[in-house]
Image (cartoon, rainbow, N blue to C red; front, side, top):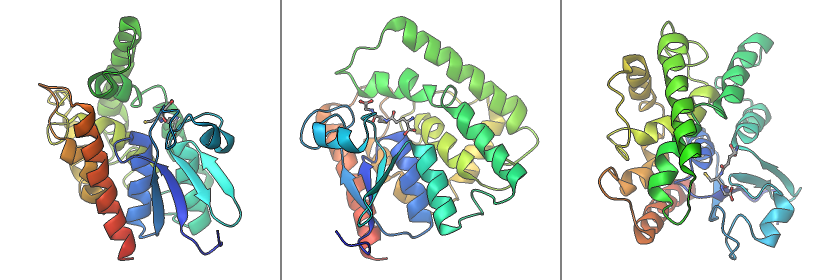
Length: 251
Ligand SMILES: N[C@@H](CCC(=O)N[C@@H](CS)C(=O)NCC(=O)O)C(=O)O
C-alpha cells in the first residue's frame, strides 16, 4: 500500500458509529475506501476474526487505517477527533480549549446516553439473531429516555446545537444514534414530547451529505411493524455502500 492510497474505513453503513465517520468524511469531501466489515462476525469479513482483532483487539467497527504508515484507530469519537485535528476541520472540533472541551463533554457522555438508543430500540429490532436480556433492554431504555430529556430541557433549550450555536462532532455523534429512530427512518420512537430535539434533528438534515450518509438507513425503511430479515439488512448495507462508493469515485 502506498501512503497516497485513500484512508480505509472498516464498517457498515447501518452501524451508527461508522455512519458518524462516513458523514464527516463525505461532508469534508475526503476520499476514503469503505471496507464492508460485519459487526460481531468471526467470518472472513467480520470484526471478530483473527486478522481484524490484530488491528482492533476490541473487535468493533468503525476502524480507520492509514495505508503506508499502517496507523490504525478505533472508537468513533477518537476517529472523528483525530480526523478533525489532522485535516484542520476546526469548524466541527474547535481549536480553542474551552470550545473543544464542550464538544468533548458531550462526546464522553454519549456512551451512556444517546448510544443506549441503539441497544434499546435498534438492535433489539434488527439483530433478532442476538438475545438481549430483558433487564438490560429496560435499563437502556431508561438511560436513553433520561438522556433525551437532558437534551430537551438542557443542551438544546437555549442553543441550536449540542455544543453551542454551530454544528460540531457532538451533533454528528448524537444524531446517528437518535435520529435513526424517527419516522423518516425506522420509526421506532415517538419524538412528539421532544420539540427541541425534533427541531435539532430537522436542522441536521440540512448538514451537507446527510442524505448520502443515511442512504442505507433510508433503504431499510420503517421497521416498526416487522423486523427486517437478513436479506433486507444486507440489501440496505449494500445500497448505502454503493452510494458512498459512487461519491468517492467522483471526488
Ligand atoms: N464505542 C464504540 C462502539 C462501536 C460499536 O458498538 N460497534 C458495533 C457495531 S454498531 C460493533 O462493532 N459490534 C460488534 C461487536 O461488538 O462484536 C465506538 O464508538 O466506536
